[in-house]
Length: 415
Image (cartoon, rainbow, N blue to C red; front, top):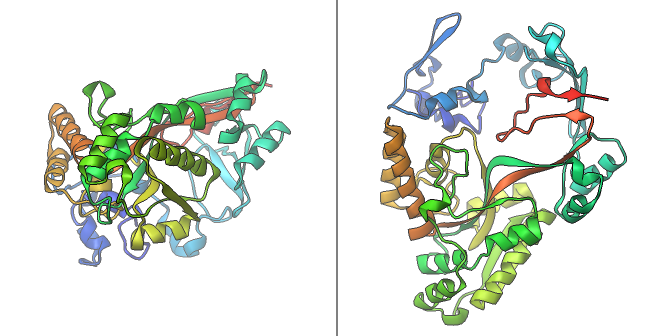
């Protein structure tokens, strides 16, 4: 179903490692039986791959390969996920879903380990504005929420809220993409200058304030293939080097540069970050950068059709392997390569890493890939590695999954 072009799954590309998956998804082959998946018995599935892939076990644990009830989908079509139709086998049943508003899940009495599930009902509220959710939390209407940037200082100093604050790792990277085909960002020296002029630690200390980790490479900690800072890969904050890069590119003190725009998707948090970095570029490079923002759907369309010189994006793990990061985001043939960057050596290195079965050799290849991407070419500017910043009522004992997909069955209410 993931590969069937009729369902048009956005994540079909993840399964292209399976024989026939890409051909079926792109319509080259119409017979789904050509996909290299075979049920050996009731409990065993065999996958035929296009080449050895050390990362495939991680893909096999993703939602894109989980079974779904064919009979329900065929009967109800697009409405198969509605509460009255959906078939699930987890610890909770979906009993209400008011789209764009709320959903309610209740304990599944037929779950094999139902006796270990303590919380009887989960009420999820869909709230657009983070400030609204924060107010509801403080009014006792919510039990756990993310903390907006505007409230970070207050939460950290509040005698009650500070004790309810949790900051945990999250497998995502916040970065600025450079449009490598649009002047002056088609010049790697200019890209290096703009990356070296970003004081990532100050941004975290004074703007985001969520104990994020400064990033000079793309794949974040916790991902196989992450390059630790001790390796010295990437471009760190160095104003003097930044000014030299810009001068060597032919723009001393920013003189002669065309008008440059930084675009971000509409969000107060993204705006604060953009304003801070805008000021850094002015201070350290002498460059005035214009800021603009768009709502998400319009923003994605703009990036696909006519991206500005610099734009904000983030990437979160689909599975915890660098193949999902450097290859599936920046390979020259990948649809997620919004920076319009093409580098033959980089492509060769990530292709080799994808096929390599020796973990040690894969790590070395990913190190080289990050060096090309973030340092030698500075094709994009990593900013920071995300954290989960959350406040939770003291009576709720919960976990914080670094890739999302919480196991609420393990949560406990103690009051």
